[in-house]
Image (cartoon, rainbow, N blue to C red; front, side):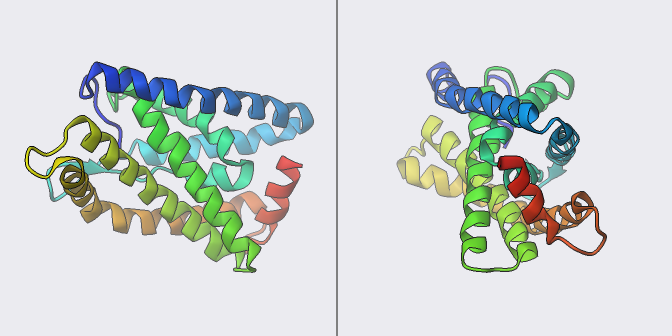
Length: 223
């Protein structure tokens, strides 16, 4: 994730900006609605943003020569819904590009699409799907965060493969290569992120050792 500055061809960079923009606008509308209905939710919004900022800023070297990091977007997706994370994720990625040289401005649209759009939507879909069949909240939170993390990196692999297909095997060969580079470190990182997200959910619920109130929290925010 965090495709570096200038790495994508111009048409790809512009295309990802165009694709991501409607999601970010919808996220801004959703945040405004939440704060209008529940001003006290701003603290949890800030916590969700800070969680994603810190985790996604931790660059961990991979044995393949690349680097990986958690994304932290599953937390906000579960509590506030995926639209909110499109806006928060854009702000996070913009600050990281400007202040940490992590990612870039020309690749911002592509990075937003993978980390702030696809990842949160996958997390939310997993959360809602598992809860709809009665799976325990802690388990649903774990898989939502972990699979949202993996989806982000799978999307980045596809983005890179579209920009730089393999000379012999084309898009699919490039996608497998990029995905393989990430998978070595991202699978254990996604598991760790899932566990950490459950711990943070416990803290947000306000009752140590219990994550049951997350359902109440999420329901009240989206009501």
